[in-house]
Amino acid sequence: MTSATQAYTYAAPSSLVDGRLGLATSGGRALSGPAVAPRFFSGVVTQAAPAAAALLGVADVALARYHQPQARPGWVRDPVVTCNGDRLRFESFSACGGVYARLDLLNGALDGEVFDRGTTNVDVNAPLREALARIGARDPLHLGVGLDELVVTTMDGAVVEKKVPLPERWLRGFAEVQVIASGMDQRGELAGMAAVRFLRGLPRKGTVWVAQAGRELKVFDRQVPDSVQLAGPNRLGTLLPLLRFAKSLRVYGPADASSSAWELELPGMRYTLTLSPERWRGFSGEGAVLDDLATDEAENDADVVGMLLNFEPEVEIGLLADRAGMPAARVRAALTQLGVAGRVGYDLSEAAHFHRELPYDKDNVILLNPRLAKARKLVDAGAVRLEGESATVHTSGGARRVSLADGSCTCEWWWDHRGSRGPCKHVLAARIVARAAVETSR
Image (tube, rainbow, N blue to C red; front, top):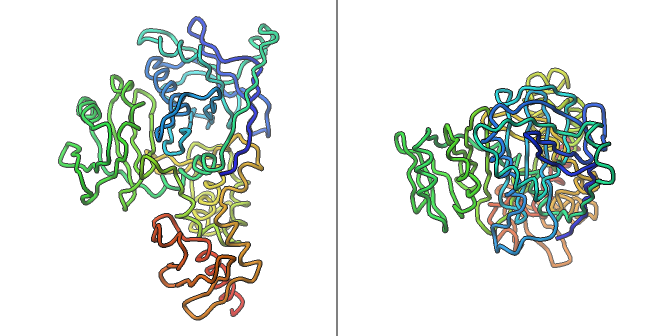
């Protein structure tokens, strides 16, 4: 696994003083273009206690390593914040790559001025974490995302610099969990105290399946119809401090009951955790969409659609299709491409994409699909020979037989995963060549 280094530079540390929460921003992108320290919002958070607890939860996930926990390292990956105009979205990803967290502060929880829209990192330091934990129900909370010039000039010499590793697997998972979420549907819901009792009654370890049974959610030790898989229930730990504010709990999952998402509705906001299929397994959603990404059309369409995005809170596919002059199906494929590049997220509650840009160096984001890159390399080397509905792919490890009909292969990857984590590089290469042959014959 390769690793890049991300440098965070803040004009001053984030702080919470006398009810004023100032979140320092690092480099990012706004509507006006790249920004060193963008300023997005200043105003009152009308629900201070749940907002502070949920923001602390997002920061806790960024620190966590749920699989093979280790002592906390000396570096911290700072959460990402996106201002979509009428809301603020805070995101983080666990160090182990298997848990994604997002806090959506909606219009009902915010009363203030929006200066710009865009995405950046925010500094969440140890003193700030301690201060957030002390906020009570009656405490006022003024939030500034981006420090104004007055604050910066009164903190001479307070520049904060952090350099943290960004493993390729972690970065790819952060981008691609949005693609996985877009394939989920709501599988269950609990209101108020029922949600509290359910979450507190979950086992801490093992794997269980959860399904709606009347007005309740029931836990099973095996997969049942319309259930979602919950591997490592302890990974839902950051939901527990929020239960005293919870209005409802919604559970989402795909048809195959593998990954799952758990959304707490709080006053004026939502806190969501998306979990990988296994406690030990990080997200590898690129496998599910590699066939779509392997086409030149999707790549070109993504360039067009990407230029039309303006940090909207909800991407309207029909409107984009009209503006881009292409069918809705191609816009959806383009959004898949943009999601894998970290340029869009997915809101389960609204069943819609939203625009954001991961605030990482573009060189770190471009090469997020090594399996697809290897497949293209095989194609360029002329390693694929088509034989009707089959193909032979010649590699340094020997010839691999591929079935184009069912996507099977004789390589170790396919035998290990049987298609559950997407096509192998040999199947991808064969499909690229087969698609090109069809286009040539037209």
